[in-house]
Length: 160
Ligand SMILES: CC(C)(COP(=O)(O)OP(=O)(O)OC[C@H]1O[C@@H](n2cnc3c(N)ncnc32)[C@H](O)[C@@H]1OP(=O)(O)O)[C@@H](O)C(=O)NCCC(=O)NCCS
Image (cartoon, rainbow, N blue to C red):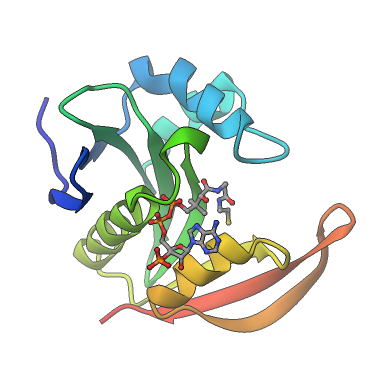
């Protein structure tokens, strides 16, 4: 197995990498998603995702271990990339893992020739919105009741 991500060390105790998600990651990914998203994905949903030709699925790992501590998924379809999933295990948040995943998802989107990336995010999810703004995303619309009773912001970013 090879690591595809760059290594960054915003925290001296944590060396982080990204690599393609693998079927054996699924039980851990389900756990991370359960503490990150509502409703979370089931194992079958991750399995299906891994089979989609336009889906790019990355896992983040730390300290030379192979167990995922976070993951991200984008769909690259023609000129558009869409962020489908981004989650970091609760104990590893605030250490740059989400940033590393986004950097490498952008690299993958660029390599596939996409020109822009879009995403939907709960309008109350200030941590995620701040992260996306760091990457140049701007709010370009609203999706009322997108998450049941909660509204979503549509955010868009150009890929150069
Ligand atoms: C959103 C999420 C992926 C961020 O991952 P992370 O590894 O904690 O993020 P990073 O450590 O790389 O932080 C990057 C930036 O995000 C923002 N951020 C992260 N956590 C934050 C918090 N608790 N409050 C406010 N801003 C926050 C900051 O702008 C931060 O940059 P800074 O450290 O220079 O201020 C993570 O909080 C998570 O998994 N949340 C639950 C799932 C989720 O909401 N996913 C997004 C769905 S659209």
